[in-house]
Image (cartoon, rainbow, N blue to C red; front, top):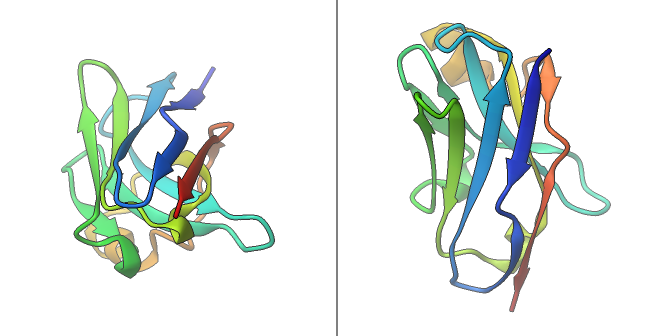
Length: 129
């Protein structure tokens, strides 16, 4: 049984930092890509960043580049989203998702729009101004 469980969300002031955790079970490390998405009230879900568990290749949404970092801990089967310099517009429910390995080209080009097979339940991030 595949499970993705997010944690680490909370309330933070503008300029602050948070680290989100996605604990993954039931998947073979190296066979899949993991992405972070977010959805704010009244807005569509959008991709934030992604990492390949096969080669650690990463890609990010333009507005978070330089502020957010996706990383992974192989022994812990965990993917992280380190968020710094948070802004009120980062307020959303954040989800992690896993899908079959896409390959370099597709990961870089389509990571935010491709289909992911497994999703976590989400964790709320609220940034106050």
